[in-house]
Length: 323
Length: 269
Image (cartoon, rainbow over all chains, first blue to last red; front, side, top):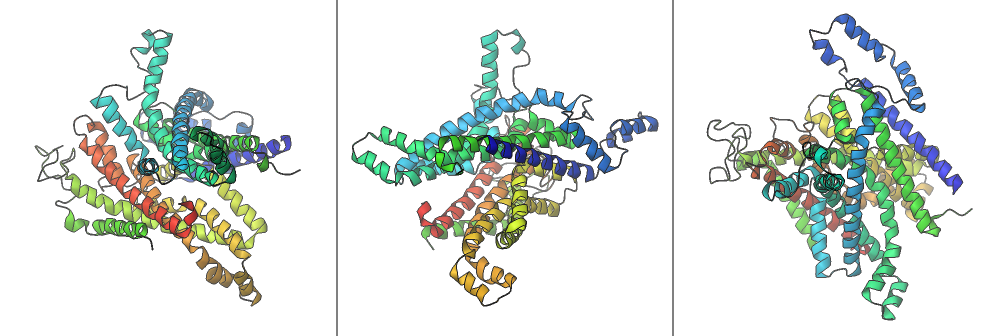
C-alpha cells in the first residue's frame, strides 16, 4: 500500500506540474498583456508602467519567468495577483471553501440520488419504474447546467419566493443573526446551487449505477438469494455491495465535470468561489491567479482519482496488484 | 437497424433539415430590431409565436438560426475530435511501447484538466471571436476519450487472426492499420461521435452563455439564454425557449447514440 501511494503521489505531482506548465505557456503566449488596461490609462505614467512591468517580472525572458514561477511554486509561494494586489494563496483561501462546500453538497445530492435511482432501476430492468427513471435521467443528462440553474431560480426564487438565489449569505440580515440563524441562512443559500450541480451529476451517476447493478443482478449469488426467499430489500443489499464499486471509481472521474459545472453554477448564482475567481482572472489577464487556479484544479482532480483508487482497493481486494 | 435507431436517425435528420431551411422557415430576419419602441419583450402571439427579445428581435427566427450554429459547430468539432482521436489511438495501439506510454500518459494529464476551464482559458485569451477558432478549439480539446477508446479497440483487434494474416502477408503497417484494423473499430467510433455531438452542443451553449462562444449579434442558444438572465422576472419565456431547444436537441443525439450502442452490443440493454 505504501509503495502504491508513493508512486501515485509522485505521478500526481508530475501531472500538476505539467498542468501548471501548459497553463503558464498558454497564458504567456496569448496576445494581450495584463498591463494593457494601465497602458491606456492617461493617468499612469510611462515610468510607473515600467515599474509595474519590473515588479511583475514581465520584463524578463519567458524561461526566466517560468523557472522563477515553478521554483516559487515548489516553495509554496504562488505569487501575487496582478489585479487584486494580494497573494494568490490568500485569494484562494477566501474562494476555495465556498467552492468546496458547493462541490461537497452537490456530490451528496449527486450520489444519494444517483445511486438510489440507479439501483431501483437495475433491480427491475424493463419495469415501468425503470422506464420512467430512464426518461428522467436522459432528460436531466441533456440539460445545460446553467439553464437548469436559471429555471430553478425562476421557479423557487421568483414564482414561489422560497429560496434566495444569489450569494453565500444574506448581506444585510446575516451579521444580525444568531448561530442557528446563520447556519440556516447559509443552508438556504446553498440549496439551489447545490441542487443544480447535483441533479445534473445524479443523472450520470444513476445511468452508471443502473448498468453496474444490471451486471451484478444476473450473477448466481443473486439468484441464490432470491431462491432462498430473501426479501427484495435484502437482495438489493447484496447487489448494492457489489455494484457500488464501479460507481466509486466514477467519484474520481466526475470531479473534472463537477468543477466545470461549478464555473457555470457560480456564475448563475453569484457564488464567490474558485470558478468565478478564475473566470474573472482570465478576463483581466491576471497570470498568477489563472496559473494557480489551473494547478489547484489539477491537484484536486488527481487527488480525487487517487481517493477513488484507494477506496476501490479498500473495497475490493481483487483490484490490489499481486505482490 | 432497429426501430429505435431508425427513429433516432429520422429525428437527427429532421433537426439538420430545420437548421438548413432556417432562412425559409424563419418569419423574420434574426438580427432585425423590428420595433424598438413598442415591440420589445412581447409575449408569444400570432405575429411572434415565441415572442420578442429585449431588442425587439423575433425569438423564433433567432432560435431557428441558432440551430444552424449549434448543429454545424458541434458536427464539425466532433469530426475534428474523432479524426485526431482515432489517429492517436491507432498509433498508440499499434506502436505500443514508449510511443504508447507517452501518448496515453499525455491523454491522462489532459483529462485531469476540466474541459470547460481549458476552453475558457484558450478562448478568452485568444480573443478572436471567430467561429473557425471556436470549432477548432472544441475539436482539439475533445479527442482525448476517443483516443483511449480506439486504442483499447486496436489492442483487442491486433491479436485477431485476420490482422495477423494481413501482417504475415507482408503488408505495410499503415495498410494493415487503415484497411484491416480501422474498419473493424468503426462501430464504437460512430457511437462516441453521435453522443459527442450532443455533448459538444451543451459545451458550446455554456461557452456562448459565458460570452466567449458564438458572440452577439450572431444568434446562438447559449447567448440567447445569457441575454435572458436580466429579464427572468418580466419575460420568463425568453430563458425557457432556447433552453428547451438545447435539451430536445441533445436528447435526440443521446437517444440515437444509445440506440446505436445497444445495436452493436446487445448486452448493455
